[in-house]
Each structure stands twice: as structure tokens, then as C-alpha cells.
Length: 489
Image 1 (cartoon, rainbow, N blue to C red):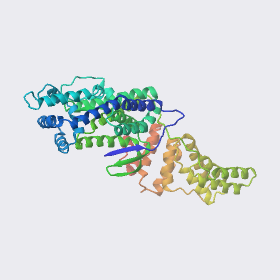
Image 2 (image 1 turned 30 degrees about the horizontal axis):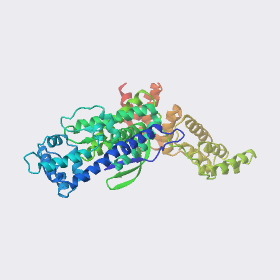
Image 3 (image 1 turned 90 degrees about the vertical axis):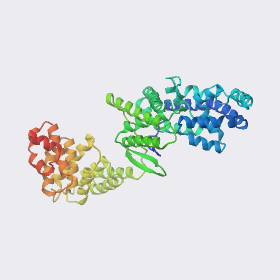
């Protein structure tokens, strides 16, 4: 057993997921309305059945019929009869249309049976207590020679077998549906949910047809939403709570990696199951949802919702920034630099804070703070144009100003080469590559760094500059694709 629940991207009530709420409400109304009423009537009829002579007259024949037809749950059904657990056995028998047809045609308890009149009377009373069929009418029917009703591929997704079945499906519908609805829009989301239900039912029908029983539940459509979620977020790391058999934990992982894990789980569960859960419907939903979202992403841009950014706690950063600005205005630059340094300690990835600290720290080019601030700017994770521009401008200033000289580590150089290639600052990227070769020829990322630089030059149309790197590429990065490309022509 494996499942994973996302802990990020909760619904925003500024744009409520009304379609998800409506789907949940519809499922709840169907269960607590006609299905629950039908269920209560069946419970009363089952209580009468257990008190009557019917179990002794009908169930042994039903068990023999299961053995004769090779039913998967024949042994389990026989154990239930021996323990006098008539209710689940009666439910299974009522879903076996071929056996019921033989029973009602007097082919099971025949008129020659000395207890035939007793059976016929009890059977009439039992049948009179049964409600008009609702679940069986709108669920998928897997019995042999059943009438093909395409509408049940959809309607079965709004039926459930128990309150626990309903609540479990609605929980996952809410957790995944809210995010997918926000990304796709309500109309597309509803269409994809219904298509996911049909895809799940179609897979289930293909696999189970002729095996008897009914197919119902929203889990196939919910599985489609889970697959849509995984494909929507692709390689973005999402925090999940997961359970694997008896082990559970939290993990941050690329969302797309969950899709093959879910598929493998459904296949394994189907292999090991006794038929109580329709894992093939789950598999059909996963495949349908993944296909729908992949096709959508191929034809239009879909923005994956992000979790709202919580308000920053009052960690003192704002006070330090205000102090630094006041001291700068008063021309107290040394104290202002100390205030910016304190602000940077509180927010080490705040680009504006680092920029302000750097502009003051460069007044003391031999000071340790100048070198430290420069390295913090070079380590900023953002890849937007503003961050790249800040890193390049700071690098040029640092290179020209630092005393007695720049203190760039090989890891700094590797990071900056990649940033400068992205920013198309090829001259500085090439100088850093040369410095890497001189000072750290054994660096584990030298090969791919040289490859990135040469590839960037090629993509920018600077073929001659890229080709000039071929000797170094052949020496340090012979396995890189760009090395083979340049060597060929």
C-alpha cells in the first residue's frame, strides 16, 4: 500500500474551488440520498433473510456455483458461510445476475424439493422488501452477458459502497482537485474530471467484464486528478506526507516522480488483491489524467498554483534596514555598513539587502566583509534577469576593487560561469573557465562547466569562439555532447 498527500498549495478562498466543492456535494447527496435509502432497505431485507430459511436453501447452491464458475472469491465466500456471515455473502449473490436468474427460474430450489413452498414464500417476502434498484442501475455491471450501458461509465463515478468509501474519496478529491481546478479553470477542470471518470471506468470494464459484480466509486476520477497534479508540477519539488505499507514520513520530491510510483502501486495491488478494490480503475484514471494534462501543456501554457507566501515574521530585518538607511543619510558609512551586514545575516538571500551592503563594503576593499558579501551575492539562487545583472555587476566591481585581490573559490567560478552564460556575458565566462583550468583542473564539475560555456557560445551564434575551446574540451570534457559536435565540423 502506498499513498502520498501534498502538503503545499492549499486552496485559496480568494478564488474558491467551487467546482470541486460542487462535485463533493453531488457525491455526498447521492450517497446520503437515494443510495443510503436503498442501503437501509437492503439492511432490513438482509435481516429478514438471515432469520429465514433462505440461507440454508440458497447459499450452499451459490457456493457450488462459485466453485463451478471458478470465481476468485469462492474460497472466501465459503469461509463467510461457515462463520454465518450472511450479509456480505448476500451482497455478492445479489450482484451475480446469472445465478439470480437461475434462482428465480426455479433451477436452484426446484419444485421437487420438499421445502420448495417454504422457500418460495420466504423468497417472495424477501423480494418484496427489496427497494427499486438504484445503485445496480447506475453502476458498472461486470456480469457475463449483461446489457452494455455506456452511461454507467460516468454515473458509476458518483456512487459509493459505504460511508468510509465516500469520505476517503472526497478527501483526496479535495486535496488534489482544488489545485487542478485553480490551474485549469472550472470548465476545463470539470470536463477533465468527467473524462478521467470515463477513462477509469473503461479500463475497469475492459479488465473485469465477465467476472461478475458491480463497479462504482469516484476513486478512478480522483486518480485522474492525482496524475494531472503530478504532470502539472512536473519536476517542481513538493512536500508530501506518504505511507508505504506500515512506514510513513514526510518527503520533498519532484511531483512527477509520484506518477510512476502510483502506477506501480496500482499494478502491484491488483496482482496481490482479492478483488475487493478496483485497482484497474485507479490505473485507468492515472493514465487518462496524465494524458489529458500532457496534451494540455503541449498546446497552451498552464500556470501551476503556488502556495501563498506567508507574511514574514518580525525578525528585526526591517528595523536594521531602516537604521542602515538613516545612518547612510547621516554619512555614517561604517555604522551603516554594519547595519546592512546585520540585515544580511537575517535575510541572507535578500538581493537588495546584499546589494546595499556591497555598495558600502567596497569602501573598504581589503576588509573581510567585502569578500564575504561578494560571495553571498554570487551564491544567490535566483535566475531572473535582475539577479543575473546584480551578480555580473558585483563580479566586475569585486574583480577591479578587492584588495589584495579577488578570493574566488573554484565552486564560485563554476557557479558564475553558468550565470554569465545565461546572461550572455561570454567574455567573463570564458575568463573564469580559463582560471578554473589553471587553478582547479581536477574539479569534478569542470567538464560540464566547459561544455555549458561552449554550448552557450554556439547557441549565441559565436561558432568560432566556441570552436576555439575544442582542444580544452577534448582534454577535460571528451564525453560532452558539444565536444563531439565541434569535433565533427
